[in-house]
Amino acid sequence: MTNIDWSKLRKAADIKAETEAARSAPLIAAETQWADQERKFASDQLEAIEDGESVVGTEREWRNYRTQVRGWKLGSEGYPDSNMRPARPN
Image 1 (cartoon, rainbow, N blue to C red):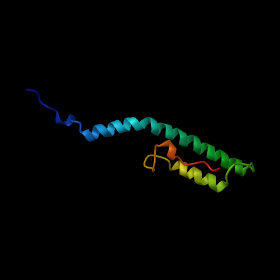
Image 2 (image 1 turned 180 degrees about the horizontal axis):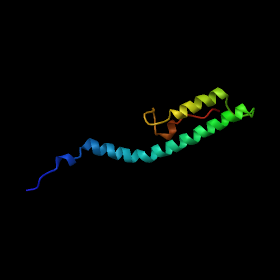
Image 3 (image 1 turned 45 degrees about the horizontal axis):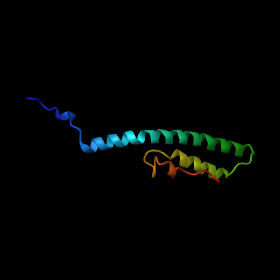
Image 4 (image 1 turned 45 degrees about the vertical axis):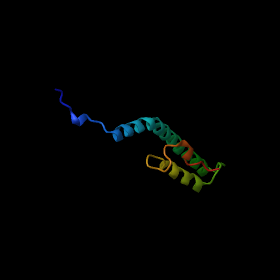
């Protein structure tokens, strides 16, 4: 007679959660990389504004955008759907 180790029993909900985590991991990695790049770009735009250079958007728009990009993370509405990313000032 074989003893069953019930501690190793996997529930359907656990399997579903693991599958979803594996599916979304590459999307989350891509969005994290995008957000890092966008924060740098926004900082560069703000620096250009401080230096008197002409850029698209105002200082306030770039500061708001940078804040939105910082908030683009797990738990944000639409995350990690790249179509829902914050939009750059135009």
